[in-house]
Image 1 (cartoon, helix red, strand yellow):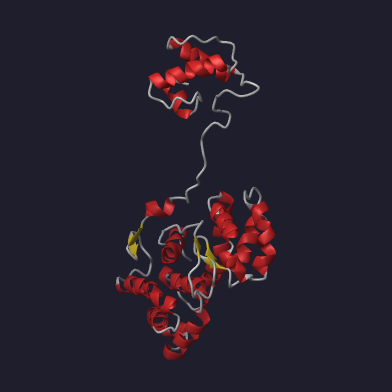
Image 2 (cartoon, helix red, strand yellow):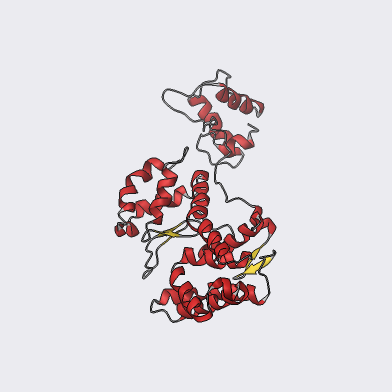
Length: 310
């Protein structure tokens, strides 16, 4: 039974293979000419062509508080039908990218990759009698990358059943078989992915079957600090009630206008304290802005408020 840290380390390896990042990239949208999977998306890059992108987006749309669900739901039928015109649908790609910053999408992706790839990989490894995290990582990588079954059967034909050969013999043989298959594949894009097997070979050579950290995968450091981080959530901490004060019709009123008037009065600008943003207040504000080197636009925005101590 793998520990949670070993699971995270195994998944980090595949995240690095797919996105170059330890935690993956939840917002990554990729389209490479010649990729049989077509449009790929998310932490470990699931594909439109496999139908799995549909499963992921549907799970997200069904989640509570999914910020982009309303925009994505109309795409579900096209995703289910594997409509390859979505490859070039820039509006669709843009909303996928936006959704990647939504914590609900990040949770949906974590659950999706566990359900569709990790759990089957872990069960397969157990069935084969594999106990090491590295062996599970190799199976997990192939399930995500594709053609696991074909490579499994070719390896078994060469070295025997996994349970009889043992993982220390079967797994290196599998990695070698898969590397040769990738290196000689007629699709030039797949030839470029031999780095995945090279990385596994390096871990095998170093005897790191337990995926002990820190370790380096494709030049990316995998350590406890990196694995303990959560994907960034880009959200403003600004007070939504803070508004830019300016001359409008009807004029802005309120305590924030009064505070602006009071601050200008402290700097000896002649304004009243009635809480109404009128032409007189705009003129006084422009004069203050010009004196203090702020753009003299008569708008009390973030820079002006900060310099006035508001």
